[in-house]
Length: 524
Image (cartoon, rainbow, N blue to C red):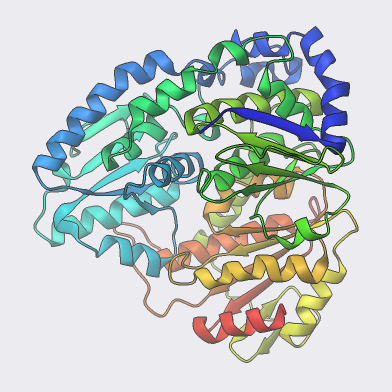
C-alpha cells in the first residue's frame, strides 16, 4: 500500500492558507516533542498527560514479545477464539487491525442482551476473553466480564485460565489475581489515541495479527510527522480538516482499503474536536453515499485508497489518502491534534461524555417507566407530538437546520439487526444532509462527545427495543436490558435538556423484526 495525500478544491485552498502558519508555529515538531503548550493555557494540564502516543515505539517493543508468548501458549491449548470486551478506543482500533490482517477477533462492545448472549454462549471451550478498560471501571466492560466469568464457571472452566486484562497501571482492573494475564498501557495516552498501545496490540496480536509489522509501519513516518515543512502530511490533513465553512468530513474507504478505518477515525476526530460549540463532524460512509452524489456545501469528502488514483479533479473539493495501516494511524492522530490547534480547542479531553453516564446511572437507580407519546403498530414513539411513525420522522427532519446533520443511534444488536444500517443512506437521500449511524452504546464512547459538545446542528433518532430474552448481570441489581435502555434514555435526556436543546425522537420497537421493517419503509 502506497503512502500519499492529495487535497483538492477548497481543501487545497485551506492547506495553502494554513500550512505556512503551522510551519511558522512549529506545530509538527512541538507535538513530536510532547510540548503541552501547543493548544494554549486552558488545555495545558490535560495535554501534559496525554501525549505519549507520539512515541509508542519503545513501549510497543517491550510489549510485543509478551503478547506473542501468550499467543503461542493459548494456541497450544487450542484457545483460538479471542473475544474482546471493550468500548470506544479499546475496541475500534483492534477491530480495524484484525480486519486488515484478516484474522478473527470477536468484538463485544455492546450491552444489548441478545448480542452479549450470542457471544457469551458460543464456543466457550476454545475462548479467551480480553477485557480492555483504561479506567478499569467502564460499566459495559465490567458487565461483560461478569457475564463471561459466570459462563465459564457454569461450564466448569476456571476463568483464571481464560481472562486477559488490559488497563492503565493502578486502575481497579490492574490486579493479576484470578486472571491469565494483565497488560498495562501507557497512562499518558487517551483511549482514542491508543491504537499502537496495549489496547490496540494485545487483542489483535492474540487473535493473530502481525503487530510487529504494524508498529514497524507506524515508525516509518515518525521523522516526517515531527518536521516543520511542506512534506509533513499530518499538517496537510489537519489543515484540510479545518477547511473554513466545511465542518463535516465524510470518510469513504475505496474498494478493500483499510476496512473499518472510517469508524476508528470517526471516534478519533469527533471526540477530539467536538467541544466548546466547535468541531469537525466525521461521517463514516462509503463511496456510493448519497451525500457524494450531490455534495453539501459544508462537507469535505475524504477518500481512503490502496493506491492513489493517477488523476484527481483539482477543482472538486476532497482529500485523497493512502497509507499502510500503522502509518495511517499515526498520520490521523497527528492531524487530529493539528486540527484541534487550528480550531482553538483541546483535542485530548471529553468534557461532555460524563453527563450521559451520570444520567444512565440515575435511570438505573430510579427507573421510570415513561408512557409513549404515541403507538404506531410495533413502534412506540417518545418525544413527539405526532401520532404515527411517518409523521414523527417528518417532524424530526423538519427541525434539521440547513447546516445540520441527522444522527441515527441504534441501541440494538449490530450483528442480527444490521439491516438497520440501511437507514443511513435512506435518510441521507431523504434529507440531502450528512447522516451518521452509530450503534448504542458504543457511539457514546465515540461521537457522543460531538453530539453534545460540538455545534448545535444535529437532530437525533434513537432506536431502542424491548428485550424478550434478557440477560442478568451477575452481582448487579440490573440486567443488560435495563442497562442499555437506561443508557439510551439517559443520553436522550442530556441531549434534549435545557443546556443542549437537541431535538430527539426515540422509537421503541416492541417487535424487533416488524419495527425494523416499519422504520425502513417509513424512511423511503
